[in-house]
Image (cartoon, rainbow, N blue to C red; front, side):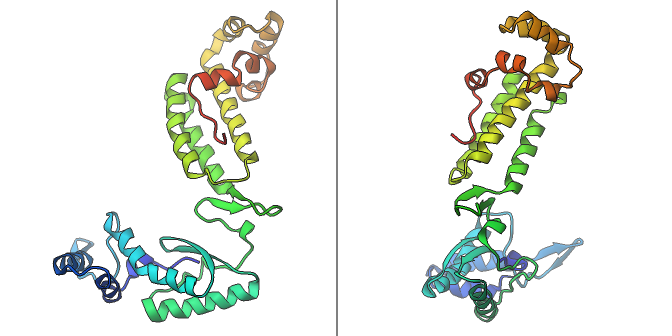
Length: 273
């Protein structure tokens, strides 16, 4: 489930009540209250801020968790298994009927206790492997954690933008940028238990870099292949092939000239290892 316009609809009075339970310093409470109720600009006009937390700063997510901590405690008291990140929450139950019941109960609770509303467009009772949560999903057969297709497509799109040939960068610069991005992405998705899509991504990245090399070589392709130990006939046939660079990036000549070890030595990290 997802809360409708959560950061814009937080009730200031309820939030301040929860904060006062944890903070006794009156000066801090006054400061937080002033931040919450500071006027906002709409079409150049100052208007009073009657609800919500200011987004864009470090205080807003902290206040959100202080408020929704009560939701966490309620779910724990009811014996539910769940995962929550800000206003996005997944609750695991044993049946669809139980899911519908829990969802209806939470809808009443959130409205009564916290004055919050569940987003009807994003609430759903479904199998875990048909849903995404923070870029993860589950495999339908063995129920293992895996990276969602949407997250993988976003990753590939970013790699494409880094390695596009028209940027005019050397292969060393491209790999340095890819290394920075891949290491951050890998650190986030290291919990994934299904690694076969990640191995395929590794192969796809190396193929894209071979394609990048081939395009940069241009008319030097034959000399570059021969310099890297490719036999004369294979190098000649590859250069005279009618296939485009992407097709040739899978050719035996480019695999021999630019092996996996070559990219590893340049600093290209693996996505799944």
